[in-house]
Length: 308
Image 1 (cartoon, rainbow, N blue to C red):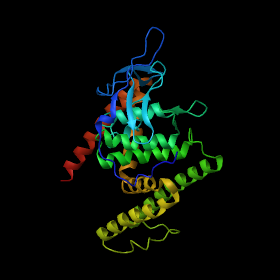
Image 2: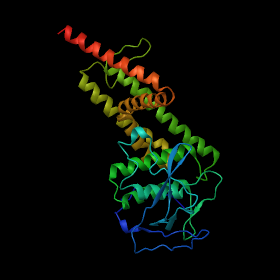
Image 3: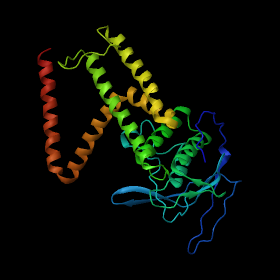
Image 4: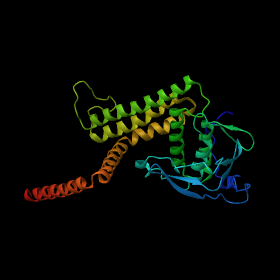
C-alpha cells in the first residue's frame, strides 16, 4: 500500500480511538473491542536492567482511514513500551506523556524489529514501518496534538525509520541511501552552523573564510542572515529525502534553528550524567568536589567585591 504523503490536512476525529479490550491468554478469555467506549490506557510499571518501561494491561483500538481497525499491542503479556521515545534532554519540547500518548503507544505496537512478523490489521492489511509512521501522524491529529508538535514527532520518527530501516521492506540499496542522506544532513547542519557561529562572533580561522550571506555586517544583520540561510538551505536540501521531504524540511529547520540550544542541553545533560554516576560510585569524591566548588564560588565572589 502506498504511503499517503501528508499533503491533505487531517480533521481531528477523537472517536477513532476506542477501547481495544484484552487479548486472550492462559486464564484470560478475550475481551472484544468496544467502539462505543473511550480508549483506556492501563499501564504496569516494570524495571529491566535498571531501565523503566511499562506493560499495557489493555489494548488500544484505532480505526485508521486507510487500514481499518488496528489493535495494539498484539500480546499484552509480552509488549513493553517506554511511552513516548524521546531523549531526556528534549523532553522540554516533546514530553514523555500528554495528549500524544495514545498515538505514540499505537505506533509502538505497530512497529516491530527486524526478523519478527509484520503487524497485520483486523482487515488483513500488512503494516510496514513507513506506514506505521504515517498512522502515527494521523493518530496524533485525532488525539488532539498541536500541529507543530505533531510534525516534530512524526519527522523525528520518520528520520529514525530512515536510519534503521527495520520493518520497512526496503532494498539494501535504499536503506543505505536513506542513511547516507540523513547523515549528510546532520553533518552539513553541524558544519555550517559552527561556521556561521564563528563568523557571527568574528572568530578568525586562517584556513576558513567568511560566509558570503553574512559578510562583515552589523551583528544583528549577520544573525538574521545566518538564521534565514539555515531555513532556506534546510528546505532546499530536504528534496534529497524523497518521499520523506516534509520530514527532511522539519528536521533540517529544527536542528539548524535549535543547534545551539541542543548543544547546550547536551553539555548540561552530559555533565549531570557524569555527576550522577560519580555520586553512585564515589560519593565521598563528589562531596569533596562540592565543597571545593562552593569555596571557589565564595573566593570568586569576594574577589569581585574587592575590585568594585
